[in-house]
Image 1 (spheres, helix red, strand yellow):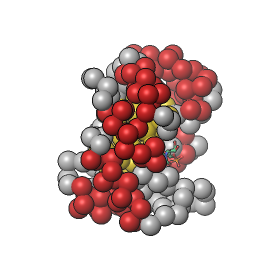
Image 2 (spheres, helix red, strand yellow; image 1 turned 90 degrees about the vertical axis):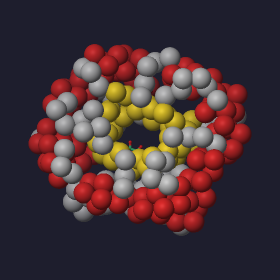
Image 3 (spheres, helix red, strand yellow; image 1 turned 180 degrees about the horizontal axis):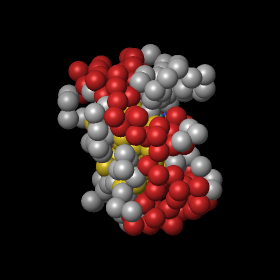
Length: 213
Ligand code: C5P
């Protein structure tokens, strides 16, 4: 059940709380990105914890190594499950992030799923992230198999760009939840197909059922 991560890309805290309550049977990890974190900060992480759920803090750190290290320390103290850094920050920055004692899982963004890129570029960044000691990478559904082949099965792949049905939005490299899990994704990240659904609970349930959760 830990496989599905719901992206809470919403401003309104009351709406977020409703969404968590509606989807809690099908989701264990909630992704908090800048949209919500800038509105509700620590409060939202507390709310997620009170409901017995985990937070994935997706702020995609990309800064000088010393700043990223302190950012990871601050994030760790929030009691979160995982966070993201951007692989484009390079070796020194990635190593600084990983050097923080008792850090949450650190996942490195390879290339945003809204961008067109080549598999070579994604693999290059995944290997860099792995050699620096990150727990895994964020990559599109289309690169999962290649990353698992090149980096090994235990290196985690977290996959956004999940679309149960064909949509016309900014995600360029997409797949269905079943296809992503079948390809080896450790976690799938889903936002709009659930949060913008007429019935988010039903949408979350259907996705969970489609991957056998
Ligand atoms: O709404 P949607 O399902 O497209 O949400 C995907 C989520 O994953 C968004 O919160 C987006 O910021 C995030 N994400 C992404 N591509 C990455 C890393 C994170 O789409 N490479």
